[in-house]
Length: 197
Image (cartoon, rainbow, N blue to C red; front, side, top):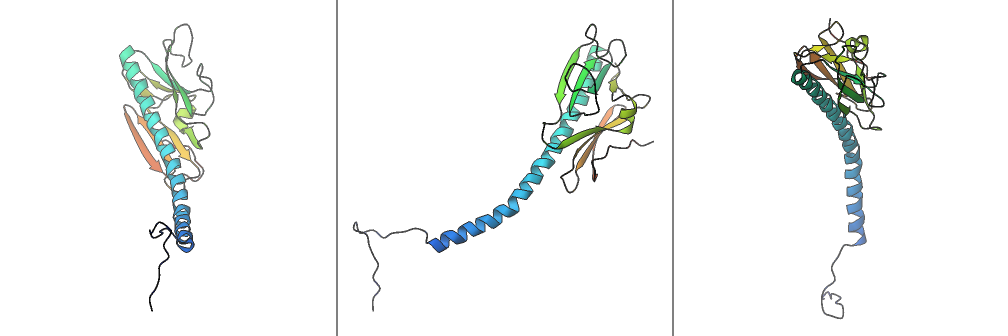
């Protein structure tokens, strides 16, 4: 008994996937995607927190460098409009020279050094000030010597957090006298960093 193969008119064999093979392939692909998509979303949120922390470190360094370079006080503060300090949302911040030492930007004698977009709008990343920064009127000051002054203190921090992350959801960018450090911690409600005594 011999088995005959069907050949098309031109004499070649037909090749391709059967419907069963295609359905199995699609089922395997669906399982892989159901595992990969949530991990990818968490990776994007985690990268958003890391990117915002890196922007804060860069802003600290710019403010310090400008204070030393210009030999004058430079201030960092939250801003909504880019023209004046205001609010407690550090998602956007203003770096400016402060000739008269009042920690407010004056058009007559102060210069805007940089406006920094720390967080992309709608990203879910929140930036909050530590207790020392909040007590200092939401201002971080750098003297002409490059050292930080946060009110009467020599340390302060800004916390970057995403509430939808399950672990290691917060980066605390702490500045102490002349050093910058980034700490990672879990904060269930994206609470602000508490400065050590």
